[in-house]
Image 1 (cartoon, rainbow, N blue to C red):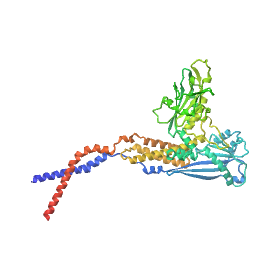
Image 2 (image 1 turned 90 degrees about the vertical axis):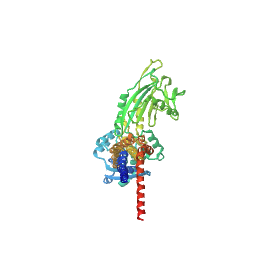
Image 3 (image 1 turned 30 degrees about the horizontal axis):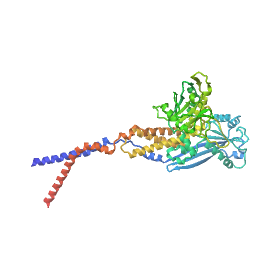
Image 4 (image 1 turned 90 degrees about the horizontal axis):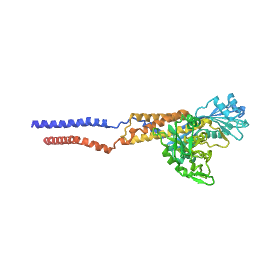
Length: 560
């Protein structure tokens, strides 16, 4: 009897010991070793970025030359004025523009520069005196009788960040009245040389609805490629009839002369790489129609949409790069379909004989049939005029990279960008929009990633992802602060870092949902493991509880 009692107590203690080990050691150890590692993320700062409040600040300097102010008015300068505009784009996005305008009189050296015989010389001389900071605009008001501006021109915009305004002879009244007369003209110059509200709202992209954009702004934003750290530019020569035409193009020299200066100037915005290729027996996907009146084959505007797909399959792609590809194709028609002309929707000939496709590139048709006679020996050697070709491709490249066409007010004259392909103020305008676009895209990416990780708790957040997210948030905050301070170059740099870090975090391979099991599959895996072990322990505990209850009941019965 005593031995049986000892064995019973020993069984109880063994069951309790096993249960205690399982509950106190086994379950915590299993929970710790199988838990999903999730590094800390700055969720509070990410939530603040979801409500985007951008302030764009820029400096404007208005310089009065000799003869535009009376001596009494000159005593009131220099002075500064601040003008602010606020726009509530939607419930989560608000824009604020801050213009700090400084008024002063011209120095002696600036007066000498304004005395140059031409506007181009004056613009260059003023640039050499002092280089304006990135994102700023300087306007020089000259007398109405000045011969520096051509007849009928009220405003001249140079290659740099300088504009010349035809003013007036010294007027009476207060300086405040003079500035009130000048203000509309200053605003027109700012809309031309700097950002506009439509440009900034178009740059916000997915954060706002398309209905809030004007048709013109929407078309411009859809034409250009979205902001990217880099772009691949490919020039292709299509020779469908190599038996008749032996084509030669100096693409390397043409790129160095016409394209590379533009890309060098765009280096702060993005990285660019250029390559070229020649494709033989590559034909258009549309059969051109012969026009008896023009004695030429034509491609209508309706058929241009069907030209790209068959050719695109033969272009190839750079699999080693994830950057967008800009394609520029030079097509030389075969002898049986030449000359080939492109017509617009009004059935008129396109002067450049070229067209472009939004966010893809451009195609130019280059006719060579007039360069040789019917008795020429085939294949005919053709030397392509690269100046003519690159003039077309350069204008298309500007549009694809986001350099929007300028809509001039009456009386405005713009100086050509020259060999650089881009003026300083056009570069500033592009940097404003790209900075805002980068901030909008990076903030959207980070907030989307935070919501995803918050909703799916079994996704691993490793230290690398946490570091990229923190870096993106820090860069975003710095970019917003630099935009508010008016430091455009630094704002663009931080915004590029933000979008790079946010995309690296969002597209990290470890975040793929296929790498993790849903909860029902986890139960299916762990139940066969734990059920055989837990059932005996639970039965033993239940048996012990039953015996304890019976012993307590017997004790009470004896007491009674």
